[in-house]
Image (cartoon, rainbow, N blue to C red; front, side):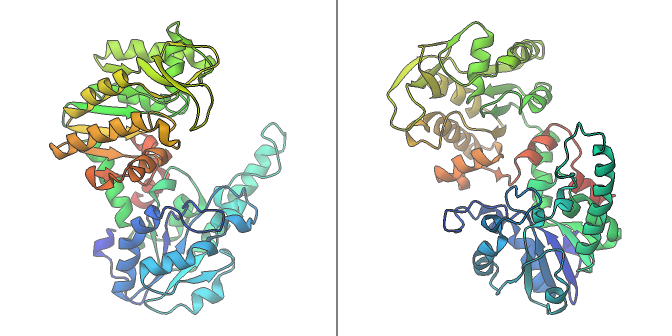
Length: 415
């Protein structure tokens, strides 16, 4: 069922949103991108004359109640955005009274789903090596189904609109759907946009195609890097993983971050890029610092010849030029992961050079997709969100989709 074709009048809709938003020490929302992303779906339900029940996780409470991760802290923010006074159910598994009192045009937010271990469906308090682990896992799967059934009992229909968790087989994303027929479960507007954006990048490639992969570790990105090697024309690898590649090729990297057990993987990526005719762009110089802080002393030096006691924290001027050159003429662009420690204002130059080049290419007709928390934070920090084609709300989900994996949260609706 398509959300546009569904009339929510007189119906209760339970919507899986992704309200895992950052909070400051006082519990105030510091970035409401994810809340704003869910509004079209939520407003459609209310405008039709339905009532909406929102469910989400926040953080990693590991199956235990943690007041610092309570969704009660965001009720005011969600109410302001939605234009109605959002009610709150302090226990997501015991919200029958709050749901029963819900009238058409009203909205209810359930407490953090992950306060219950059943949401993630993983046994707690038992090690994987324990002989009883398999038994505990089976028992948890039964409990997960019961938890999903309880959530489903609150509503007449289910809407999956949390792309950020679509790669997880959780109760609220890929089990709850079993309790609704195909005419009463659907993707929300945000999910539809996300799926379409991924398809635009992978299913409708306009060339040249440039992908920029940043971040600190090769290990977390190797699956997507290998998949992209068969698709892209240019692959930029930046951020902390630069130094794993530099060391793998015999370079000196001082005290820069490095995965010593992935040096062979780095060499294999270089080899495969050559075999596939991909222009692999790696950092040739960097901004090195004598301390991991914004106020550290800095120097520009070759990425493969960093002095002892110094560490690379950002891409250098020559590297920035090479990145920009590989981006500016592209017609399809994917960016996941910054080029340096952009949280420190003095080390944002590499990431900004990437953002500027993407904005220029987009203005010239390229389709640019930005995904992953840090890349999105970069774009927002630079005030350039309106200069790119699409900003994804999913990190891991986006990477798995681009890696070619089927997302459980999407598959559940399409079954």
